[in-house]
Length: 308
Length: 308
Image (cartoon, rainbow over all chains, first blue to last red; front, top):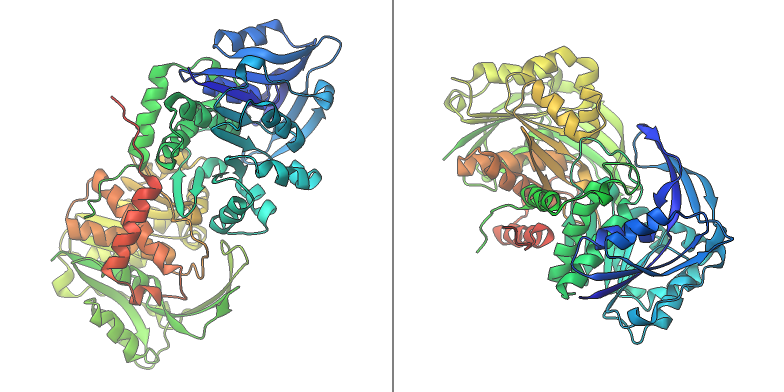
């Protein structure tokens, strides 16, 4: 089975939406990425850090889904990273209420020895130098390195971000962040500028408007499934990334044509993620449900114009 | 050949964008709808009104594209409808600078006798009672009546709009307008409410984010082609509608499956419209260019996940 290394936060989230609010629940980028990737027949490992307050039950949830957790460092005297936020009525914007870095402040990721030959590495949103240190630990340049980032690092560690971008193959980034990083309004032009910064493949995430995959002059567009109700968008972007890398690891095919399928899988899994608070929906998701929703994506996008 | 009746404005537009500005040029909803529909092997007729200031050259442009203009009333002493607007830097919003109704204030559309048996009627954006009067003149209920409208009529003639909506099959409407009309934020829920108001098919236009086609529980999504540069969005929505009805008239098939193709044709033609000021690009568009762009739409959206 293909190995997949995932680095990112394993955290507590507290979420408030127009539909309700939660206490501290399971969250973190690596959690969402891992849960999505674990839908595939692969061998994923999470590299992260937690405090003594992190429940064994949550670790068991990950292990039970065949996610290797030997790279999750436990700091018994420390506290787990905690984020809380409140979504506005349109569910497209949110205010961060709390960010407690806690053990994350001193996170030095260590990739378990038996995962240093993984062909695919998913660098979840973290300081660019932390992401880079994971690439440094691999036995060789992985077949595919995928990086997610956000505007915070553009504001606070831009030159480090540029350095790590030179060493990766795929970047996933929001539309507004792509515009910030390049100063270009057109996403087509922004993608080309980002391509020039390093990554051969650029995925621009547009939330409820779907995602665009760029490679040279090729573009592929995956819509988000039109939903009656978005209950909680937390983790949707990471779930998208987890579905994307999980599918690529499973198929072993990193061509542009196969990345189209990977983007569709990412969108499909993200469409489940937003149906319940946090990771709840991703913990109770059957193959039959995924299969049914992939069919919906086909009906949503496929047409039959014959072109000679 | 299938007859298509198009009612709407034939007008002068003056447009200002970040790329430049125009004097009074050919514009109007029926103009854009007609030029798009004329790409198909059909017999379209425009029902509209113009003043003595409207150049014969512009009428010839329409006639030369096999658009029947016998339903365009000329008021020699009157002035043609004039709109001018200025687009903001993001090209997604605009300010209207001038609206001179002129001859449009007294427009009483008369459908030419030999087009009263048309199977498809496209009611471009006008007062709902003006749209209704066209339906009243048809020999029988057309096979397909398509209506475009805007927020202005929701604010000023809502009950009339509700009346005409009961008599049409397809509505095309912007996302914000769908939300205004229904009070629902979710476009899925909004489409269902609009469906309950009359039209069996609901097309929600999302500008650069594409368009959604709803019918009962079915949804189809056509993206807008990602463009390096949107030069002038004027007429894109009408061009979309013209491509939609033109394709349906040409194929004679108004099933949901075929409407998917019609939406793709509409998006394809709209992607040309925005490349130049006003209708300029639509007047110089070859079949080969359309064919090539349809291929781009296929590459943009089609994927190969095998589902049993």
